[in-house]
Image (cartoon, rainbow, N blue to C red; front, side, top):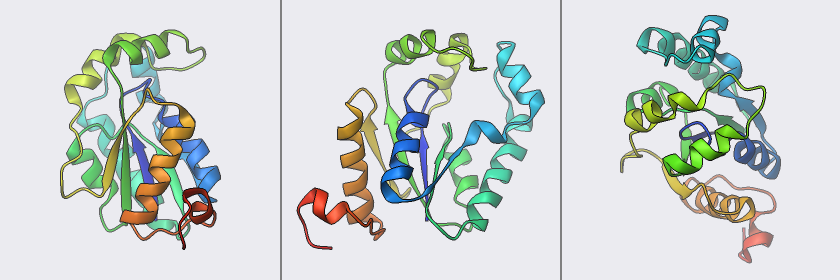
Length: 177
C-alpha cells in the first residue's frame, strides 16, 4: 500500500511523511525528488507549474507506486483531484491531507533555507487546492497540530479504514490487532 501525504507547500508533509514511514516500517519518498530540473528551475524562478510540467511527474510517481509491493509513504503536493487520480491509477493509495492556513504556510516557508519553492507561490497553491472527496480513500488532518498527535490520528485512520495493519499500532492505541 502507498500512503500519499499531500497539501500546500509549508503544510509539513515532508516532516510528517518521513516520520510516518518510520512508524509504519515503510519507505519514505519525497515527490519533489521526482521533479525535472526544468520544473525545479521554473519554481525557483517564481513561476508555478502547468499541466505540461505536472503530467510526466505524476505519471512517474504513479509508476513508482505501482512498482512498490511494500508500504511506501510519499510526500507530494497532489493538490487537485485530477492529480490524485493519476497517482492512484491501478494502485492502492490512501491520502492524508495536511490542512493549514495560508498564513501558517507562509510563516513556515519564510523559515526554510535551501528549498526551491518560494513563498510567492503559496497563494496559487491554495487556489489550486481541492479537498478530498468522499470516494477518495483518505483523511484530512489539522497540519498545525503537534506531530505526535498527527501521527496518532493517521495511524488510527490507516489501521481502521484501510485494513493496513501496523506492527505497533495495537499497543499504542490500546486495542487488539
